Length: 165
Image (cartoon, rainbow, N blue to C red):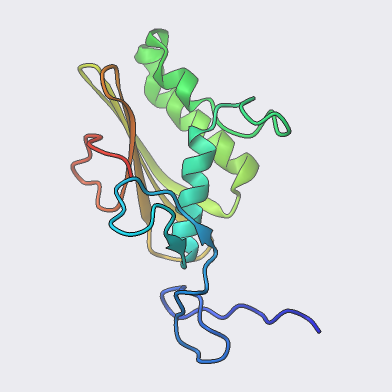
């Protein structure tokens, strides 16, 4: 007997095949959220959430870090932590992100990448959508010499890298 085809509502949340309502028992995977009020590994129930987690993992993985997949990851860490790249960092960050996404997450369409350098902090905000889902999703990555790297999602209009989520 073949597995049932997943059904989604208008918010792209998985629906329970029996009741037709979103089910907390139905998830695409788990996320990792250090600021979580509940579980450290919350269930992921939307395509956007899963794409966001996949993008976080791809960009925060250094190429060669996974032995079985030496090309998986991005060059983002190398670019952000090298002082020599500050002159053309916007172009290098853009190229590293788009190259990694094109190679491993082709269902993600990047709409904009903004890179800013303030004092000793580099902020990168990536806006993207998933396939034909019109609502954009934002992820912000900040690198600072004292606090290291932080990642934020959600409304990032004034993103300055203040935490990890």
